Image 1 (cartoon, rainbow, N blue to C red):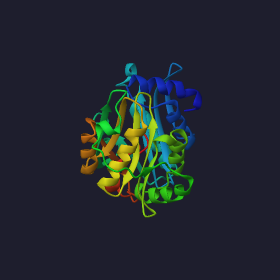
Image 2: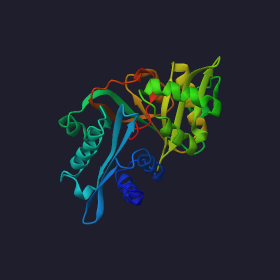
Image 3: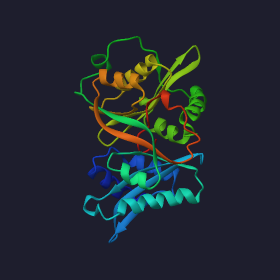
Image 4: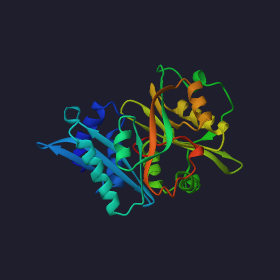
Length: 283
């Protein structure tokens, strides 16, 4: 895949009802210019897949998209196999992805096993709604990301995510600094959340919190700063506090995802502290 293929990728993700933008496709190509692939049939892009490697500890495979007219011909499987071969050639020990129920059997056949379950939550609100009308009022203690706090966030995120993804976080911060929230207590970082503006919705995450109170403040910051009518959050099912807060904030359960891995999974991070992932395309 090259940047000239981005319009074709956008066409496929819009046909599928996915939320990616040109900025997201550029993020894939910035991170892995040789690890993103398209399937061409009669000179037209009919399928895509992308990869991102994090410190060569593990890599993510995503954006397995196939034109609806060409499904059932093995195009998606071929693309997935090409992405796996690319990462195997680079001796990446662990490959991860977030699978839909439809994709789960295919990934299992290729050696992927389940790690944990994720739930997608969606909020649809009127244009005039704010955090005050959705969540019960509480004392706010969130603040926008500052340059001085960046090193602390990247250090904490490497431990919690399992690898350095500072380039991805920098990209999110650069594009939507107004949607970033950090929570500090006596100079200690208790939580942080990034977000991005998608094709039809703002996407909350990655978001990390030490406790339910911090989760609330991160979600409140996102709801206050976003002006979109549709919002998305992908929350690990094991984080019941985050799920309950999303539900109390008006989010409605949409669909399941299964985080899967192939290989050793030696750098699993601390998923118990994840309120919302960056999205199935980024992990």
